[in-house]
Amino acid sequence: MKRFTSVQALSVSKDKLEVAPPDDVVVFQDGLLYGVFDGATSFSGLLIDGVSTGRFAALSCARVAQNYVLKTHPSNFSVEHLLHQMTHELSESLKVRALKHCRAATTISLAIDDGQTLHFLLVGDSGVRINGHEVVQIHKPIDLIFTSARVAMIKKALLGNNTLTDSEMFDLELKTRQAIAHGLLGKMEPVDIEQLAFDIQTNLLGQLPEDAIQVIPSLLSQGISNGQPPFMNQCGHSLGYAVMNGHAVQGPDMFVFSRAKSSVQCLEFFTDGYMKPGDDPTIRSWEEQWATVEAQDPYKIGSYPHIKCGTPQEHWDDRSLLIVRADSGPF
Image 1: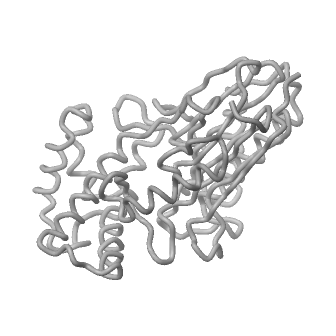
Image 2: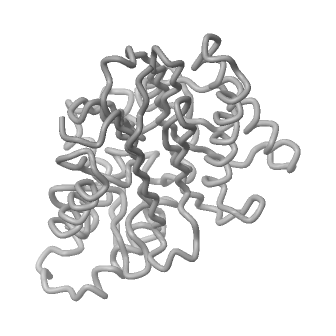
Image 3: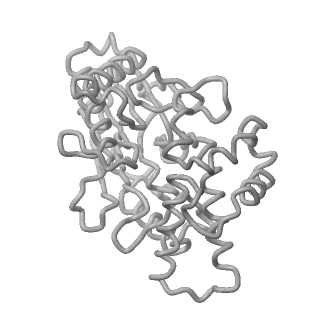
């Protein structure tokens, strides 16, 4: 029976001092389970059992997954059954802590190994690269709206003033981040919300369906914290997206598939803190690409636009990587 004998893992907190642990969690159970979870960033600052809501969700689901493969015979492995167990456990964990309506959520990129077949589960925008070339990752369209708004706001603020110091740029980033997170009304002056919404609608016309274009003004006014949650696990709207939050998981970015284990030599599971995969299936290569992205677009308004960038205190996101290989040599 094939074994993944080479294992590499890395998890880096967005906190540059690493006082706060990452919201990401890496799981590896030899011959049974491989993957990463990326807990959603909390806007409330609430801690559950001493950790962020995102890390709590990721840890809860990781423990369920590990217990599942240890207690279930490989011939009975079922991704759908595991998904149900993770959903139930997270829901119950929040309920017993009187946090039933708490927004604790995580993405998932996971493979269960029954010895003959690899059963994959992807929820959200964490991804996997198979055999060093096939990348499976799904980005949610709603991110495109908030990213476009942030980039437009920063570029407008920079018009005629391209000599801002790093300190001034980071001040601008924090103001913009607050506006994008909590809504533009009164958050950043002067901002013509109607004009900004019209510009974003115009720019994204043809990239997003009509139902998404129509809600852009409302989303910008409410911000990510209030405008985005209604689309969690929502079907029937193009902005609906899948996330593990203790409720039924559904959406276009939930993906279940299988591969014969004999066809797989290498798996690289990664969270979205990596915007570009490594040239090779090594941590060194992925980290080199991460550094290249940071150098090319430190403010995330150019080649690698995003809803936020790094600051002197934080990287723009946590990042985690798990690489398992059947051998340590090149392909």
